[in-house]
Image (tube, rainbow, N blue to C red; front, side, top):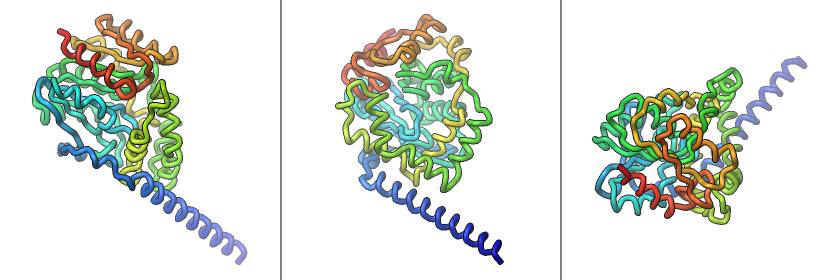
Length: 320
């Protein structure tokens, strides 16, 4: 009888622990989304085959597609500060990638090629003509691969703080696959994800890595990123799991060297040495790439120095 009692106690402990984790996850979801800031920006939905994709459209003129960095806290809000000015001269589209922001967040493995398909289909079916594309962070690799797959859909490419070739070459291994499996679990994985993407951690990330002047990090920005990371019961964890599993990486070097597009790299001028050299790495592989640095900014020059960034972007987009 003693062993039966131990089994019952163990089962009871597991049940209570699981229930507590479930309640914590629900509480975090409620706290992070109660202000509902994402819905303040109105837009449309593109019915893509893997889920609904939220996007906005502003202005008239030559089309420009703005693609946010692929993180679980990312959304088209990333471009909020430059849309108004840029839409005076262009038709400006912003998009929430699948698994991010206001778009659907299916429980799937997100890959580089999945997003290449999304970008290609969106340009063909929504924009309907060859377009200039501005992307940030990891998303820039999807744009380069999309250009390589079909050279008739993208004109100029502007990459903001793109990832290095070294990081993009890292392929899934046993440890990364195990981490992805853990993060994808319903209750434990969600709790781990929620403990990583706390408001405090997001604030620290923005202040220490994204911004040069951390006093410029607004409460609105923090809340937007925090809410985006936890909408749909923290379903953006599936994107995060795929990133950690290295499924979004791709060797873009061969694709890059085969392109005839006008390509530009924009980064902050206060990067740590490794980050500041990334633009030079791209330029060494394709000398025609032009590299521009925005003063007093780090990984998010388009957010921190939006006015300077927009002025420079308009110059690049007008360049023949």
